[in-house]
Length: 243
Image (tube, rainbow, N blue to C red; front, side):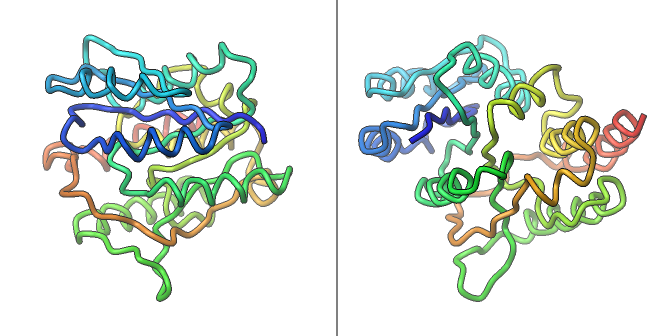
């Protein structure tokens, strides 16, 4: 199996990190490694990560100041790229709202077909799936989907689902420079791919995979103030990459 580095951004996640699940998964699946990013947490996150990192294939980086999820993921990729053994890179939310078995399913889909270079899970509603979201999360997702249809011009249902896998080449491309937005960097990833490979690339090498299971772990961490800023951040991204 090809080696994959999974980046887990963490900001004040001490009470939500399920250490045993990460440790057991790493022990059983030795082709996966975890890199946790302590993004300037002010709670006990660092102490939790120090305990988790005693397991094989689990490491962490700790930043003194909070830089935001986008930069945490980017710095994690850059750190991982120093190691030539990783063929794939991924990122996943620390609370495991998307269970590790769902990540593993996506990884198998990705690696079973060599044409896929960037894959991501999506909260597409289906009768046979356990995917229930609070209205706030659902509303944000549909608003962003509307913007995406106009801006990206791609048939994507959900850009914001926190589980994505990519080849080393794509990881190198998307992590080259800092992102504009801490919250909407997923949209920027799509833009960077578009501006490098074109939209035709999406139909052949990118796959959106519906989630089978989503575990609600509490309210959204995005504040009301940040929520109001999202449309303006989106416009900023649109005009920056449209150029």
